[in-house]
Image (cartoon, rainbow, N blue to C red):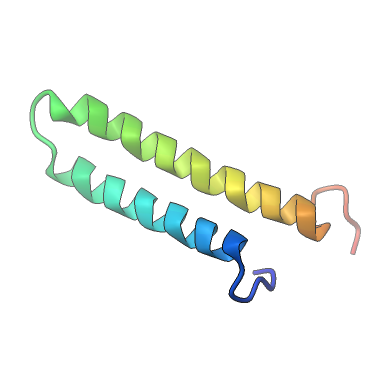
Length: 68
């Protein structure tokens, strides 16, 4: 992974990952009508995490077009 020591971006990425994990746990325990909402929450948390990782890669100059 890229180096982001004690930065707000690292904290935000860590928080997003934790939110995804928490949403996944909620989904596993959801019953009835809660399942649909929980699945949307999991997907939203996952997309936020992926977005933040992509944003950090762009900022760090790491991307698909990089030949390093």
